[in-house]
Length: 142
Ligand SMILES: Cc1cc2nc3c(=O)[nH]c(=O)nc-3n(C[C@H](O)[C@H](O)[C@H](O)COP(=O)(O)O)c2cc1C
Image 1 (cartoon, rainbow, N blue to C red):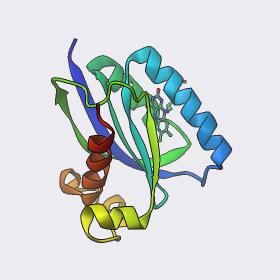
Image 2 (cartoon, protein in one colour):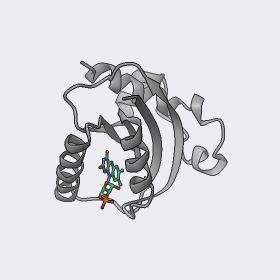
Image 3 (cartoon, rainbow, N blue to C red):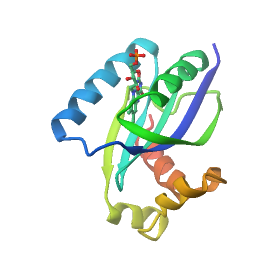
């Protein structure tokens, strides 16, 4: 069974309440456990930034359903590839709201120019938001 990962960014359709985020995470974690998908979701300046990993077929299917989800728009693929090993064993979906101070600590400046990425839609493999995402992946990986 081959393993794969996908990282993407999207715009929240509307600000979700704490309760609706909790309900949403409950639903996502339940489904990911069934499909052997692990990963992390960050909320950064109103954008979702997510890393998912798992069996290639399941990742392709889930990515397709995520792309149709009305809770966000404008998905931008940042990175994807094959994996020998998972980064996570225990997180069916970790969740973090990342503030500007944390961003500054990781990439040296607060302004990630996320809006620019949505406008230009190119060269996203080198976008600094990936540095932030993979810093959290590293910190939580087991
Ligand atoms: C930002 C975001 C991240 C999501 N992440 C996942 C995920 O990791 N796994 C998952 O099964 N669904 C995730 N979903 C929910 C899916 O879009 C979809 O609602 C869910 O897979 C149920 O799809 P189904 O009704 O086709 O079974 C996410 C949705 C959003 C908006």
